[in-house]
Length: 293
Image (tube, rainbow, N blue to C red; front, side, top):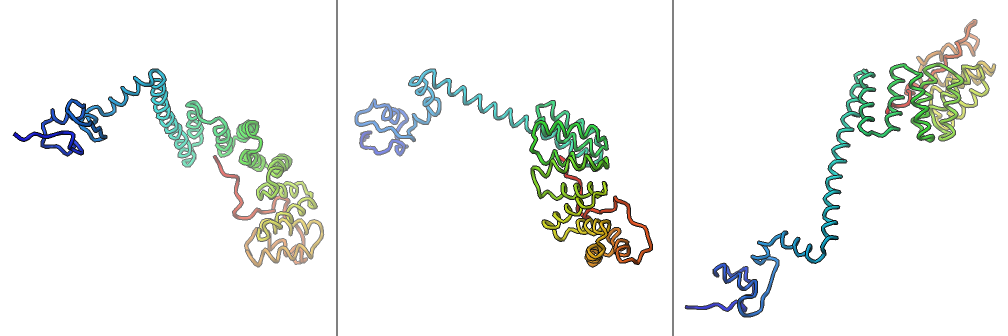
């Protein structure tokens, strides 16, 4: 009977013709000759992760088990966090959907649920300000924006929200205060400058108004709303030549722009009398209240 000498076999994994006991003997060194363990040896496969784990526990003891426990806790914590964030997103999304449907009470209920589940307080307060503004409850909107301003004084969204409320209330003094607050942070902010110019105009402070409109035109020379404001301020300051230039430019771009033809006729003496009210300065067609949150 032909015998095999295990020590001559380069790799026991290749000895598929040997009985399993022969391979086991080679692996654990019970047969003569050198023992060569490899990552692919059958016994290593049988031990798998359990063998490695037991050797690590034997070598490192309690510190190793402690690290394993910490790692497991972190994995569970991450899973819990992801689940929580998905739940919060559901409430936020429901609030946005309700707003789209103009169901502002439902939108507020959903955003309050978002907060009760641990949502960010500042984001909730800012969004409530926007929703109350849309609901035309300007006192509550203002209260929310002021509370948000206490949390993050440099937030432009908060200050623009207060500007929205002031314009909705048509209060020139509140408009000026809100616009000034925005411009302290961002001096070239278009919405704030237009609102400030309009507030001066409404108070018949035409010199301050025209100065502000001209500053806007330095940044936005093609803005038709600022052109209109400058032209009407020139008219009320009795600078008819400048008023005519302004109204002519507007009519060359948009013949139907509100009050432009009337202003041109008044400045040129073609209209026998009358003048538009102080609220006729029109913002550019694209000017809208600051976006919601």
